[in-house]
Length: 198
Image (cartoon, rainbow, N blue to C red; front, side, top):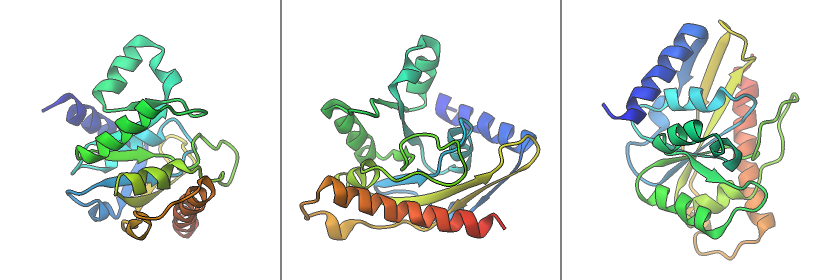
């Protein structure tokens, strides 16, 4: 068992011991093909819940580069395929690394809002999600994380069907176009969040 699989099993045990953890729609993660998962983000626990939910693929998540400043944590994040990014000004090499991870069969994990949204509700989607999907020729699976994050309370991950951006592969798109397409995915995440919160 490699390090990634060992840690994700630990994440799953943690999620099930300390929360009423359930996953709906795990079958919507295809076994192969270029893929991005996009989820809402309200807690530092979100990456743990996502990694625990996806058993058939390895996830390469995008995370703020500041997390890598603490060397031991940075080492572990690298072993878990995490890609550091400057959220304010991502450089070309980072973008290439992200696209390479998609091409190499990893599932790219990204939060469309670009950061944790601590207040109630949702933020606005950034351009990155749809840009990586289109340039990486990847489908996007919307994931809604529904929880109040209190110990022993319910955590639901609702995984929807993949969304294709194939019709845009040959289009010349602006930043506004990418933001709009990313927002469309976030709207699906929001809708599933509210439906399954009842």
